[in-house]
Structure formats: C-alpha cells, structure tokens
Image: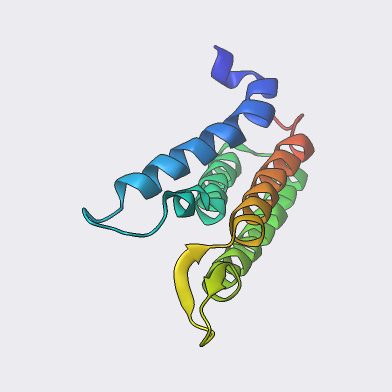
Length: 134
C-alpha cells in the first residue's frame, strides 16, 4: 500500500497534515468571522499535534529499547516545540495596531510561513531519523 511506503511518510504526509490543518481551521470558524482567510494557513501547532500522534503510535509499535529511547526523545522535543509554537502564536505572530494590541491579522512571514516550515521540517527530520526502525 502506498501509505506504508517510507517516501510517502517522509515527503507527502507532512504536507497532507498541513492541508488537513488548514481545513480544520477553516471549518472551525464562526459563521460571520471577519478575520482574514490567510490566518487559516497558520497550522504549525496542528501539524505538531498530528506529528505527536504519529510518534505516540511509533512508541507503541517498537520493542527495541534503543529505538524506544530515540522516539521518546523526539516526543519530548515535539512537546517542547508544541509549547514554543503556542507561545509564538500568542505573542509574536500577530500584526499590531498603534496601541500594540493584536489586530486579528497574522503576519505572513513570521506568523504563518516560518512556523509552518519549522513544524514540517521537524516532522520530516523525525521521519528521516526513524527511517529504518520498522
């Protein structure tokens, strides 16, 4: 099956996670939400949560202690990245008005592109590191 191929899990799955995150954010909007739709593309935290799910599944399927330690370290790193992502999203990713308050618009590069790329790169790195474990 194509989904069990390693190239699919390393190169395609992170982008599918991103698209799923975008749709989840779009579907979670209130009826008359006036925030710009570009905010829906800020899916780094969602991608990290999905990657944590993959890591937790890997922990359940491994029996070699060395592999388990490696995945647990990745899991801890992903948890740290998750909290950093939430912190960044709350305090640094929003455009500000003249009073310094967030105005409801994500900054494109710092608020969307960079966090999304970091989350995808973290998942791809995890998959490359665990490539031969199964």
